[in-house]
Length: 149
Image 1 (cartoon, rainbow, N blue to C red):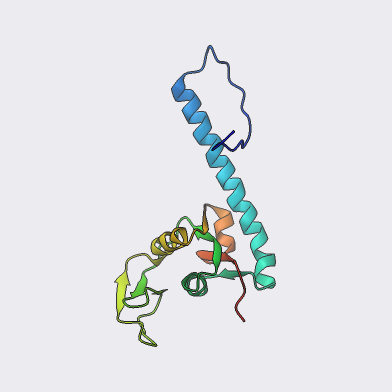
Image 2: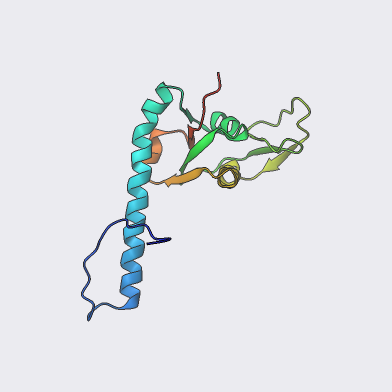
């Protein structure tokens, strides 16, 4: 089947179910599936950090994102962090210090939101993590495509 990916099953009674009920149940099912996948990624983060294949924390993840190194981004749903985007290089950072001709720092209300947009432009996967699993990393983390020594 082209363009379709089976993710599970649910039981419905065709003569008794409405379109609205189907839509609600599918949305709930997909939310549960996304939550399970995000929690699985968080569980794998510790091992990936230990082997150098992940970052944890806003600044280190933003650096990896600037290098095009992030394959998957983990985002704490409740995180909101002010920062800066360098005017010439486009690099996101938490500090207003410019270096190496990157241009002037331009204030950004939420670097997490901008990091998500940058990750999607780079075709990285993004998992928004809610609740207690999000407390197991520091607002932003990334699984890496490649290591930099």
